[in-house]
Image (cartoon, rainbow, N blue to C red; front, side, top):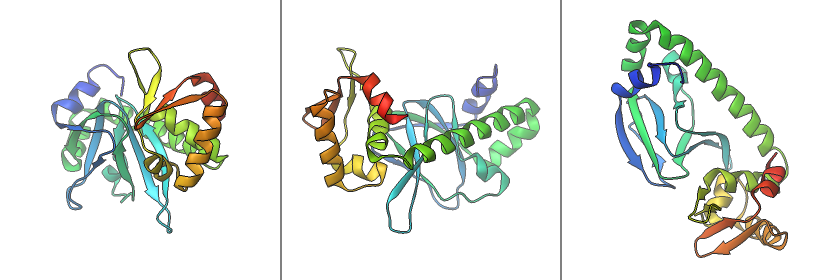
Length: 204
């Protein structure tokens, strides 16, 4: 949504809220809405029949979630803030009116849907790969730059396991290997990234 004035138009009609890292975005089932990520990062995911989570995409500032609802599609997904985030929400009905009032918004929405679809395909393909790659990708996704410039992912082994759709024991084993390889360091309630490039190579 980087077209001049478009992002500002959407935010002017929205209600913003702070969502702490690890918290889900929730709303009443009968109140469909479009969410705009203003600050931080969010994760869109669904659940398998066995209850395991499958990440669809990561969403950064300047992008929207929930556009399928504009066209009557009832997507089954959940959204979680992976870092502290500011999320602006606009009711679907109001967003539809904006599309009529601001024709230039339509092209921006089409571009955003294309970005979302491409992101989802890349994320799902990555998720079909080795578990080491999925874990590396999520650590990088939730990491926030610390005072020393290194990424710090404040996430427990259990939350990491849920996010990548595996067992906690598997995550613990992979993280032990990452530490052995000099990719990360452990800290209380956090994972410190020592070699971001090495993790990126595993995540691709």
